[in-house]
Length: 579
Image (cartoon, rainbow, N blue to C red; front, top):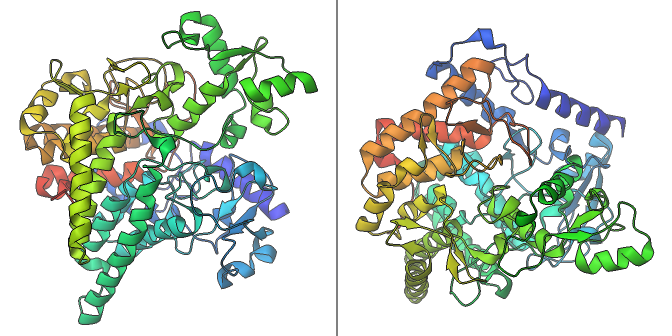
């Protein structure tokens, strides 16, 4: 146990270190260097040198004790393996080597929610067969949508075997844990993340370096694709379950099959209390929906048994969750419905903004542009892949699904008078007027017409800043709002402009983003999770939520490489574009 505690302390110290980075050979998590070490203009060569070395720094495997560390939930380490599989050989010795408990899950998992985190005696890591790249900092596991961008970066840096292994890990997740998970921790067994699976499958299959250039290699590639296609069908079914339906729109919503506050917030005991204090100070925000119930419910800090029975129905169970116990301020707690929205927000990856009400507490009441654009592209990808695996009837079926979603997107999400794609509140049957960067997703997905794309591009000034694309046009103080920019949405936006034929805009924005990353690196010698695109640097001051600007950082490293490609060769920007 001493070894585990030492690893926890080491990871925490590395995450917060601000003075010890080595550009050519990054530390266990890339740290920082003094501001005097560089100018704000940045040196792209130094940034690239750091990125090339960071892949090894951020790679984890089941044979590595460091992979088991989880500073979000600092309990004794447990590694869970699927109930239906024997303990893998590389795991058998971990009990002694890493002082970790290896345990089977209690049952076979067919779909999300079959096993709930609270059913397990302790939180733990879920076994994956191949090495993978983590984002960095407190995020020490393989994430669902981060990995799409990381994969593109790995392929740009000629790490094809590692990229393919990560997709194989996702196929393993679908087969044994029910779907592509938010990440491979037990507290993520109730939700997924934005669906990029088919884009990852195509990126691997269409890369000539993924398989040997031999007859046997081509046979292997075809067999791999057939296997991947079958499991992608199962993963897609996650998004068509009744709980994921956005009312009667024919569109999907984000939804988590758990209840109450999320366990992974155990290391941020003030977040939910901060939300409560904000809602108390802004009473109109506490009831953000027309005629809807308040996000706040009466509740004490240490409820007795009778009060807890009431809170189980109206808020959360303080006896079942230490996070719930601490989610209290000034005799108020958060409502059960807020927690449903909070969990759905985390499946979206945008945690949090004010896009779906304060702290995104109404996420589950919307058909979002991002999710439905991604599902349209998923359906178009499956249409194409079905032909490659010799299933023309399946291809026709996927084409019909894509067409139906196309029609629903244009009925509910396209606002022709404003020239934007906007989220749709299916509870109150009205379009959102919250300008958000996801308006560019339909360009990347191929669902926007040329004329629609032209109108969206005419609204770029809503998001374009000196340092790249901002998340929104609203400065809420949240990390996924203005003036903050993130690598994944900058890439989707820029690649969408390339796909729609607006290459000058794409090149300009790619240059702005990379200049921001260079400036941040010149200042502190590391690459960050997010940036202040208004200032064009890494000075991010967040009011609530994840207040740290995590270092590492997987998807930022990857997108920097892809933006270089776009500036030098725009044709490379639309990896695995829909056919």
